[in-house]
Image (tube, rainbow, N blue to C red; front, side):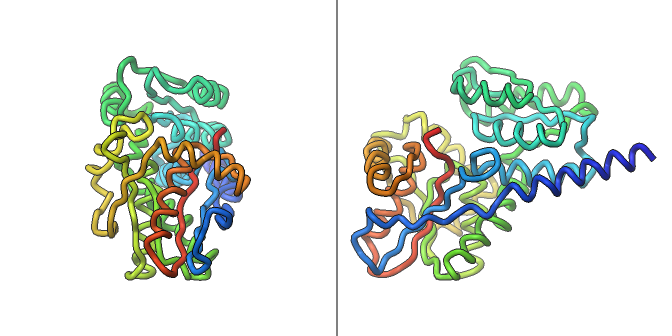
Length: 300
């Protein structure tokens, strides 16, 4: 009987959290446009529970694990992250009283570490390791020692990572543009968001153009683009959904972020600004259309 009550309570918590996630606004970028026939919209993903687009994926992964019986208050979620996914895991888990153990690079931003720690997650810092693939080796070593103790979320290979955006973010974009979206433009930094949105929009409209952004040759070593090449090898990133790629300068994105603040009132990180920059490049190549991009986070 106690087990039934406990399960009922954790499912109730899941349902309560779902009301806090999704339905983020689609903001019109008006003052940077030059062609009135081309509209640019940006999905403000930081304006939701947890302050990051990754909350959708974290919730989806945790929800499916709980419903399948793989995760509960007596089992610890374990995974690797380079920052924002860790915050998303810790945010959802804190509401559900689920323990979390996360492996992160030792160079992770101190503000992010304080947030993750403040949310109650256990942190393991890995010295000299900055990519997710290498971080996963540490997680697997820990996980394999005591599989009964852990649920390995393994988000890069977890289909619920991208399906969260397929069934929510993309559907919201279709509804918010009245189905008029013609281009989806984004870097693949948030792999789940890019994949999920691109697949759903392509299924909705085969003629819709999906444009992936990549760092130009002079900046491929930039910290913000360090995972670009490894992301391209992830199984569920299906290139058939990508129509073409565009180079984006991170330095130019940093400059644009200041202009976006002054003209649009949006305080964005350079990474989010790079998506706006890519959308503006596409806008300059077409005569008519509705372009949508993602703003995964703000400056804060």
